[in-house]
Amino acid sequence: MLSNLVLLAQAAPAAPAGPGGILGNPMIMMVLMFVMMYFLLIRPQRQRQKEQERLLSSVKVGDHVIMNGGEHGIITSTKDKSVMVKIADNVKVEYERSAIASISKKSDVVEATAA
Image (tube, rainbow, N blue to C red; front, side, top):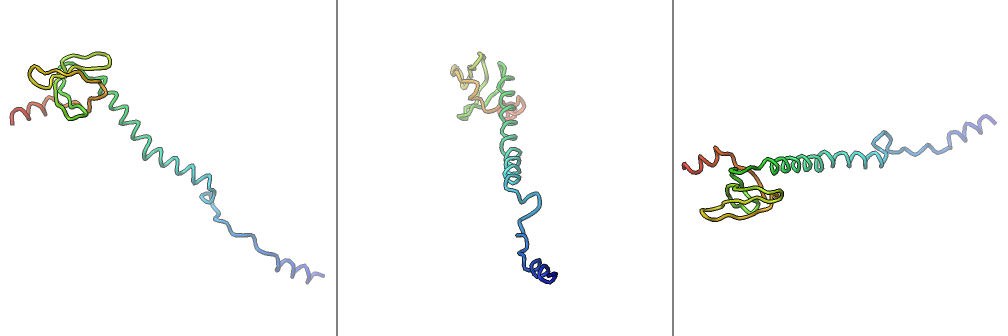
C-alpha cells in the first residue's frame, strides 16, 4: 500500500511553471507602462505648457516677439487676450496672445541690427 502511494505521488503532474515573479502579473506591467508614459510624454508636455503660459503672461510693451507664423515685431500695446505688434514702419497688427511663439532678448535684436 505504501508503494502505491509512492507511485501516485510520483505520477502526479507537477504544477505548471508560470512566468513567476512580480513582473509576471499583466496588471503590474500595465501600471508600469502607464508610469513610463507619464514621465516620458505627459509630464514634459505639462512643463512646456506652463512655461508658455508664463511667457505669455510676462509680455509687456516694447518686447521683441516672434509670432507662430514667423513674423518678428515689437509689442506696442497689450490687452487681456490680444497684443498689438508693430511689424514694420506704420504697420501694426493685432494678434491673440496665444500666437506668440517666443520673446527675443534685447541683445539678440541689437546684434542682428548691427550686423
